[in-house]
Amino acid sequence: MIDRRNLLGTLAATPLLAAASPARAAARDRAFPRGFLWGAATAGHQVEGNNVNSDCWVLENVKPTLFAEPSRDAANSFALWPKDLDLVRDLGLNTYRFSLEWARIEPEDGLFSTAMLDHYRAMITGCHARGLTPMVTFNHYTTPRWFAMRGGWTNPQAAGRFARYCERAARHLAAGIGHATTLNEPNIMNVLRVVLPEPVVAAQHAMLQAAARATGAAKFAAGNAIEIDEVDGATTNLIAGHHAGRAAIKAVRPELPVGLSLAMFDDEAAGPGSLRDIMRQRLYGRWLDAVKGDDFLGVQNYERQVWTATGRLPTPPGVPVNYMGSQVYPPSLANAVRYAHAASGLPIIVTEHGVGTDDDRIRAALIPAALTDLRRAIVDGVPVLGYVHWSLIDNFEWISGYKVHFGLHRVDPVSFARSRKPSASVFAAIARANALPA
Ligand code: BGC
Image 1: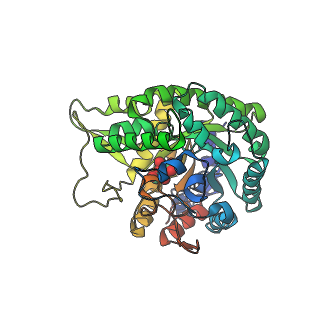
Image 2 (image 1 turned 90 degrees about the horizontal axis):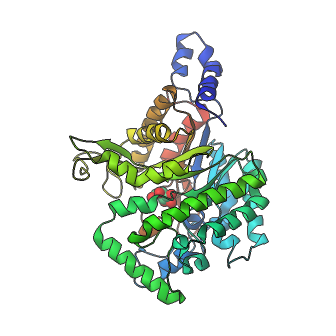
Image 3 (image 1 turned 120 degrees about the vertical axis):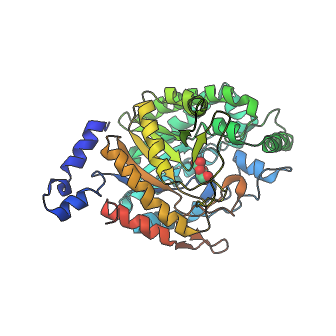
């Protein structure tokens, strides 16, 4: 495991840092540690298309639904994954973060598909052929339809089923994986419980009822949509799932680094009696205990929240905003990372960071600014092993469908052709140099 001392050691050992000339000293002030992971991310359901056995496919196609549109073909990455890997390589990145679709690998309870495991093995091999380290998420929100029909993560048997899937997938795939995460943002429901407006909670309830009716299930609970009053119970099962999944993967390959990723705001306190610390406890508290014993913690940051004594401050006027109208605030990434490390004691990988916007200039400005602060955190001693941008390509942004764009590349909805956005070149230049721009 790489710890803080090792990381600072690699920074000090970088040849740039030993130099005495002013130019070299200036370069040293911009460099990232040697071996830093530079990556871009996707997730199966959001890019593959036709993930028909998943819980989300059901939710997208029932009435009423919260989804603006169904995922359909997505970016057709189930077929076009070699092109996606080429994009990552062509940016000069060294890491690709993607997820396995549990619903493809285990389309019925206990029935495993060798062909689908082979598909993901081909992706892992394809990464290595291009010099990319595969960072693999075993579960990025979506669960199989049969799992959701048995109450999903609210079912006490969920952890055992998840571990069985992890063990089967690890036996087929672990040998080629660089970093594994069990669950993507298992605290998302804690976050949604805090930020979802009441009408959306009611609409989600109606959608889940419709899914239960459509599938004939007594209770339908999806990977990222459950009744708000079930969040605490589901969290208990998710934590058990993480521990059992981690043990299953480690049993196959003990030296493979395993962790999970959390949705984390940059939480700031404003004024006396700020709710900040109470909110941190609600949003991450149980998970920061649960990750003890992991090899790293994945941080996924998109926004900051400024907590007063009564709630959240609104976005100030005149600042750049994302598609939801929230401020695009570059320091938020490093602030979240500093907190995540201080609270967990673990090395950090930024497993997601980005912005949903149609104005790519906002993304192009955000990346170098956020990385400047991230580097400062590293120099201050926070062990950050890598930075993975969300997302490699525009994709299915859950309930928002295809109208929200996080990609470094555009995807033509008809031909599925990928085209690079200017922000991708900004990111590529930093990754290639392993340093901030001069
Ligand atoms: C999720 C992604 C999502 C992204 C942008 C993250 O919370 O892991 O699946 O697309 O945020 O909203």
